[in-house]
Amino acid sequence: MIRHILLIQFKQSADTPELEKLRALFEAMPQKVTGVVAVEWGLNDSPEHMNQGFTHAVLMTFADEAGRQNYLPHPEHEALKAVFEPLIEDIVVFDFQV
Image 1 (tube, rainbow, N blue to C red):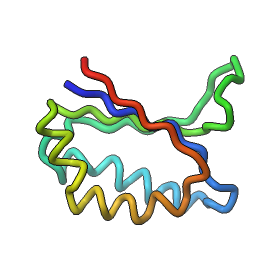
Image 2 (image 1 turned 90 degrees about the horizontal axis):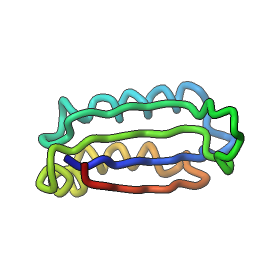
Image 3 (image 1 turned 90 degrees about the vertical axis):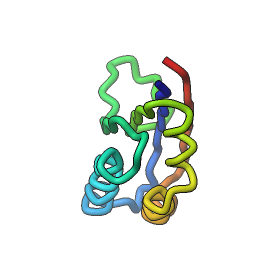
């Protein structure tokens, strides 16, 4: 299993309807892309205030390396990126094997 973590800082211009659309696109991935097991979306609520401007997180779980390799070039991933990339101010992407 592979966990794919996105820590996201959105542009100030990103509005609630755009973020809701983006969240729906992320959360639909397990139904659309073989190998994507789960997607979780959340807002930072740490009382430590060490998020360095990152306000949102997405945690995707891939079944295995084949699932990740299927997702990366997949047309659904490309469609998601077309909506996602214009909204991003900064991002950290971090994958690890479970």
